[in-house]
Image (cartoon, rainbow, N blue to C red; front, side, top):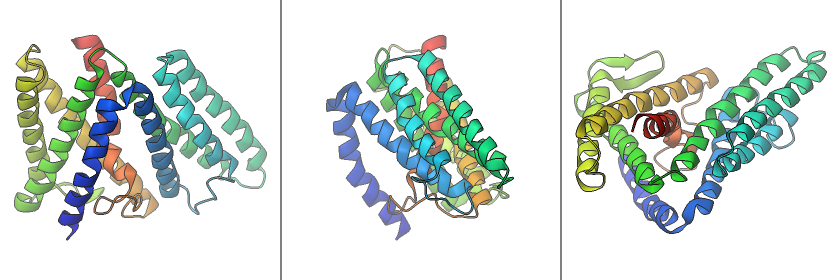
Length: 270
């Protein structure tokens, strides 16, 4: 039943994503990523803050919700300086507020660290998707990234389910196996080869295979990292917004870690 829900959700969401990326243009893509960032940041807050505050009324989390879309739009206009300034502004404002709170709550510093890290984890990493989209052949590389992450995730899930015996990282994610991880990497390599054959034939096969395997590795690390956060927060899923998939952060955890890799590879190694 869980598998069926996963596929139904994917089938329903896929046409929307395709239309958005093919017809929506860079502006709507940045707007969409901004919404994703806000939702994912809210899920992150609910994971790490115990007890969970009122996310809108709490100044620390509310300021994070303000900074998040501003960072995405700074990426949209390719203003790297603005992204750094927004990260700095968030630290300064949140730090000042923690000083005010420390006298009555010694956990104010811990809350500060969690909020600042959330800004680095969610909107900063999502910004790379916008930077990729706005670069030369941006759509081609956005689709490449999505195909690689989807292939690796699907391969790891089914190979792990059918053949998995040896635990990959049981302290963080008991259900993930070494066999599943290898299956995910193999699926990413196959998908990368097919994508190169039909979409980017001019790119050297060796570079595509290298990038595919790196995305597979880094994406799985991103998945495990989010599982580590959930372990810390003692929850199973980051949310329930996607039937069969859990929360939005559960779906983009690998993408968050893989996006900067693709951007750097495209900008500096091609």
